[in-house]
Amino acid sequence: MKTVILCGGLGTRLAEETGKRPKPMVYIGGKPILWHILDIYGRQGHNDFVLALGYKGEQVKEYFLNYYAMTSDATVDLDTGNVSYRTQSQDRRNWKVALVDTGQTSQTGGRLLRLKQTLAADTFMVTYGDGVANVDLAELLKVHRAHGKLVTVTAVRPLSRFGGLRLNTGQPHEVEKFVEKPDFTQTLTDAQGQWINGGFFVMEPGVFDYIDDDATNLERDALERIAADGQMAAHAHHGFWQCMDTVRDRDMLEELCATGHPPWI
Image 1 (tube, rainbow, N blue to C red):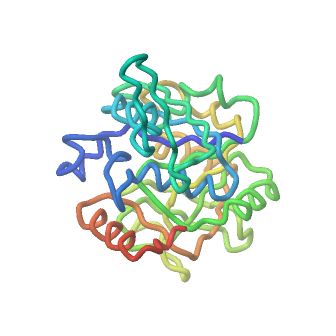
Image 2: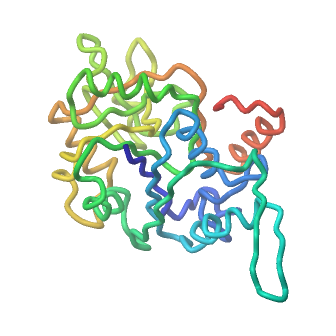
């Protein structure tokens, strides 16, 4: 099963960092947050990734093209020009990473649409390049397969700064309404509190029927219509989840890495 990481946005709310690099390449704990996201999936057996690149995507390409050179001891034979690497065991990963340019100005839905040929044959996973969580992916996939809908979104309940979900209390896994920021605080309050879109999606190829072109926003356009058609379900995640939207978020994630036991592992 392929896992798509959306890596192409401008990340304007973290301008202190993203003026120099794409947000997925902002470092926490000595590695880009993108590495931590791939590690979350890789530790649970999902190793086939497609990175949807855009803004400063060449930096993501350079990181992975030079991954072993930068994380290994190297021996250079100056007579022949041959280079051999001795990879440090803690940095070895069995990941397959496809680096795909999905356009400088494409919206999130447009980026996904550009991957249609790669993804159209089977169920796939999608998440954002700026959020980490200790999501149980096997349980997420189990929920998705049980309800038979086009999309399962991981629902989380942090401080309410994002778009929200209203869950159908009669159908625990059905999303009754999907509302992208900023007005959900007026429309999506219930006895449980406010659930938000935490990424970590599972999707069926039928989602491409809801995406028109590069200008389609996955959240405001496609997912709102998918939920309205009764084709979205939620996996309620009660564990750790945190996005990196601001310098404060970055610093908090850095502090968690410094403990040696970040809570998303």
